[in-house]
Length: 287
Image (cartoon, rainbow, N blue to C red; front, side):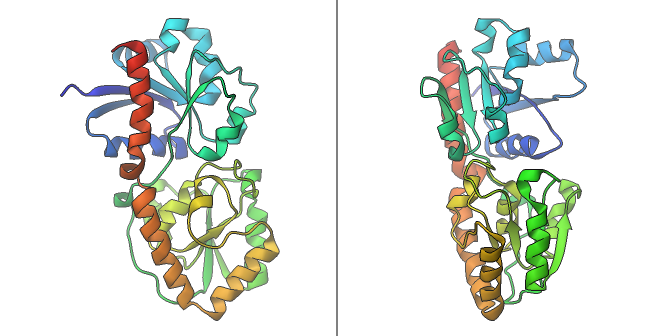
């Protein structure tokens, strides 16, 4: 079988890159090439574009691609939204082009006259270390950049009010994260409590396949994960206090979440949705 060729023009150092790296491991019949969206040259870009059957990049880059490529060349592209901020970026959606989104939480942001696939971000369990949790709660963990939507100040307030140690991972390299997850008892997501604020967030799934229970705001793909959700600091504190009183419930939550994610949120579980988008581009271009 001839492998389909995928060219990803992406930020290879952060979560968007990890989405494609995880997907690549689940699609052995596809060959991937990458260019980081900083520091590239036109010769390298052109060579990868001509090599590829399918090209994919962030929705942010739609305007850039339109400035370099003609209408026929644009047909090879999928413009993927990884978050609400991309959709808010004065995008002029073109019904002739193909779009996708990392979570169905973004679906209301796309016009009804464009083709927009759900190509979920997910997790590759092999990248992490699974260990069943013990019935204890001495600390909480939080991971992410200093992005206002992630509301790190909520995390600090929750830790203060619950009198639990706070373990932060704001700049750890990805290769160190599997060990970091083993150091925490409960992982929390504090992003602004709107479904379209985030599309993952990916650390929630990474924590869960590491055996760590997760609570958080109802955002992105995490909103579908079993377990308590909160929309205020006070609600988060109440949930955590209930776990402090009954730490065995944390063990039960960790197992329920792990089973759900392994069934529904790995790249092997969602790859058929990506293949549907790829097949659409292949069919449209009669490759």
